[in-house]
Image (cartoon, rainbow, N blue to C red):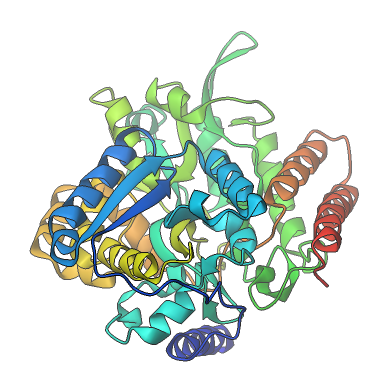
Length: 457
């Protein structure tokens, strides 16, 4: 009951903040007067492959409707991976040349810590305050919380996802397992994986499960226990200054269960395997990845076998926190032109309408961030015909808004420390306490170095 009240209070605070004014530093206010002519905007994104085609479709729909009516034209520009895109954003920011900024930029959740402090970013909080027509209550609360800082909205959720368990139903049947009953806990995951692992002599020809946990998986495996990876609520209540997974017991509980799973012999860990390709080839029974990979996974598998999707297995049966929200949000960069900023806001609003989110969801696999999407007749028909897409939505709605990825500036360093020390423990190179201590030490050093360099106290 206490946790329910805590979650309710968190959402009340966030909703109240969205209705108020942002106290964070605003972007450059010396904007040029709003012009009356047509406005052309650039949208930097990181959606490649088939997802890029969906981006182009959404932009085209905007240009031909709202854009045509208001004299706005959007040009989407693919900038490579999230890492590639962020390098280009940082280069433009460091050069302090407004003409090189994109008008709209897509930034992943893992880099919210950086982008929120960029002076040229116009906080979504400021935009929401000035536009009462925007119905914040229609947006999934977990996604809003994922891109907020000190109770104020930084970015507008757009392409959001959660981690899912994907499994080969055919291999379940071959192993005598019920394909309608996927593993509910890590313990069950290990037992299932062992039954579906095959060997030819000493060579493994088929693994039951494959993963080496890092921050991506642990955001949920720690969060579902009601704990945080870092202090100040994972860096959302205030700047993160230290990790706390080493003191709250959550990492130890996870590693204790994880070693049992690895010792069962069905887990491929410590290798750089491409799990999605192995899964599609029928050589891997289960793996975990983003909900956004669903459509691509189904395309790769084709008719070779039947795919199942399930919630991420719990660390403990009593865990109730659910999984963290990943994905990305959209941001407006102030280029000194108010007309451009106003036009960009029109596109952000369009991108998360129920209709736009339906196109986005069905084209990519990302779940809709607008809850009104579920009221659309075409959405109801889609979910009836494609029940695998329901899993991510049901898991999201069963998860607490407080279960989030850390808003830390050194996620790569966190991930490296987590992978290395997890392997050191399960491979018997270190005891559990030493592995956790070393994991925390490496993470805290990276965090301290970053905060010192950027005058964060």
